Image (tube, rainbow over all chains, first blue to last red; front, side, top):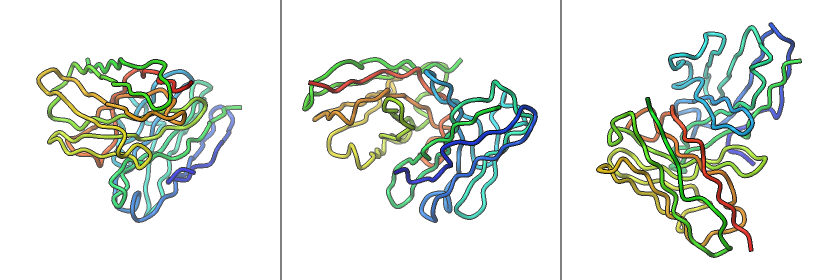
Length: 110
Length: 120
């Protein structure tokens, strides 16, 4: 059971928009920055969003992040088949003094 | 170009030990926190341990007392000493660079991972 809660899977058609939620508590998301990662099978995770809503250079603006209280959301617009991957949220847990991740969400582009 | 190259993984019996290393290049190593994140086969990401630029260390409860993290800034190397290994420690272990010197922000570069298999 992960500290951060994500839906196991989401799906949408090419060109559409999808959102992935990440729910936590005041001890983690509520008082720390959230990051989002994309992972294709057999490869290392890749940073998509940091500090809740910032994109590293090279990440298309189709990817966006937001945070409200103890939850965060990753949005992907203009879905492409190449976006099919696992997506993870992550943050710091202040009372545990540990990093935490969500269980991951598998995105299917139908 | 930032590069993180892990080594040291392999097959080990329960109760055994293993030392993982991560060779870093392409950035000023001593300015950033570094972390180990693992992924069991078919499972999600699990943060294992981290060390700040200043040398403060942190561990997941699942490995506390068994794993030790260290960094050698003169050699740009991160290490993870794993003792009393259990079957549930079986995973791909990733070295991950933090965005800043502390632990509270995400990880912008990841190594390719090294597989640790604990089995009798």
